[in-house]
Image (tube, rainbow, N blue to C red; front, side, top):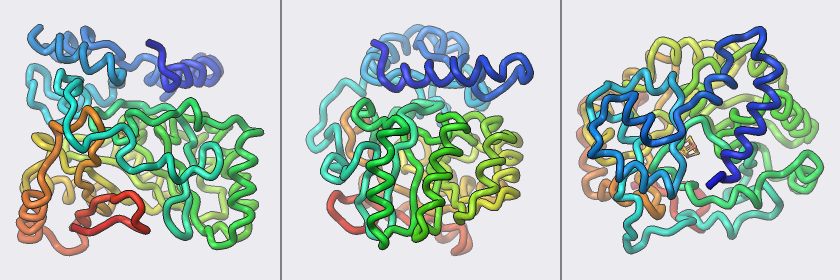
Length: 348
Ligand code: SF4
């Protein structure tokens, strides 16, 4: 099945990849176009035995595999319990239904006043700037999101932009997706240009995993539009384990900081990935080495297909209590849950 997300990616790569391929052999577009997108290749490249294949194929039918080489290189081969692998390897558990696990766990369908726009909280709105990601995380709360209804063309963005212009209480635009940085720089520069012409907008926030998954995404073209906007810039990364941060990620973060961005991180608490105080402490320490401050530690949103990642609230609270024994306060992420209809995240 060719999903809307994959179709977008192919289209985007074809447009931008052709343009740069002659001069930049390892461009992020090429790396993305060469990402692993099938279970056989993923298992083979990591030396996983054939026992993992049926589950990987079953999960892949529900939500496509996508793993670029730059991320694959941080996964330890021949280790089915590697914490990075567990985030990207589909399993048969994804086909199981669990009570309370639904396709739209945050009820975002109720908060879409215009195509591509989600307005849940006071003073800020979220723009679906891309339906695609550079990696498909198995626990993603938007794994069932109807991107085909929420991927505006330039002319269709006008409705969302008019909504922002007419509401002077909105001070922050959050680029989200998918991963907003999966979009081309030409498109992003245009969108940011539109946003900065709205006088009451002060901040641009970018929720992205791409600088972690493919650090080469933070290239001159991106830094060009990012550094020149008048809006204050916050880049909220998504990193769940210290092993995700290699030197290339640290260098990419330095470039973002030099462009004037404040760097924060949000993680998801995931069974068998980061459900220990020692692992979470190592993550916070490594984030700080990369110039990133821990922001949120989310408990899992109950999205259909991801119940096997859940860590119960009581265990989450106990973990965070232990974490306080390891870390200074400024390296402590806030443990939160997103509850549909609430005006902000709910601390646990
Ligand atoms: S990068 Fe973010 S939006 Fe994309 S699949 Fe992973 S969690 Fe979901």
